[in-house]
Length: 342
View 1 (cartoon, one colour):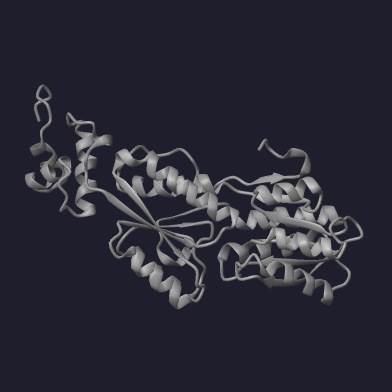
View 2 (tube, one colour; view 1 turned 60 degrees about the vertical axis):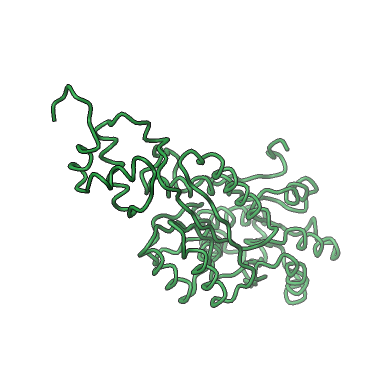
């Protein structure tokens, strides 16, 4: 190509191995082009520096299906707010985020929701637990469109990326805090999980136990109980735990229901004698830290995770610029004395 003349659509077509009409459809946003060809055309249009503002190019709209649990838990509220921000932030890249919620934790029901949500989508972002049916469904979807897992990974599905904290690291931090808070005397502790089939919950539980077993042998994890992501059942689980283990000294809550745990502890006059460690800084957990009912909160950034997950999809389709933010989001530890301003 003569360096003195401007590159043309014919040049892009030749370099990317597609027809002129395909290039014309992509660069003028007329649709009807496969994702693979569209990505190739845009890549070569940028390389050849065709005289267009490609980052703001009116290519076809990308539809991202987002599937999460329908709950009022602080993590999921912040996650939804993050996706709302991503929708506004990346609107110039012609992307739409469609949230679909599941309430029934039955794997057949969850699989059906995921399949329906992904039918007309260009990408899928999902927060889901591990089950053979769920893994198989997402693996089949990942053969067709990019899939990003958030919060809890599904590594055997062929997903494009996982965005979230290192859950094993979070569990180790909780174990270190519990062991230090209980001190030389040690004592019994329980873990309250949502569903251990959530890989993230299983990883936190296992790492928590490992640290206590290895570094604080005077501490004993006597049970892991599941609230099935139902905040209301946590209060009952705590009461039952003290019925079985009257000398219980520690609670590590991986899931929802901090207020229910606090109600149970207050009712039994155990709120200041029980070490209570949980996840996600919220209005409720902040108040419990201030009151001394909770001892530590391990926090992540669901807001950031949502935005980052959408960025991963956009980068896959060569839209926008690559973000320098890591896929593994940082962990923060909050105590009564280092709470950030409201």
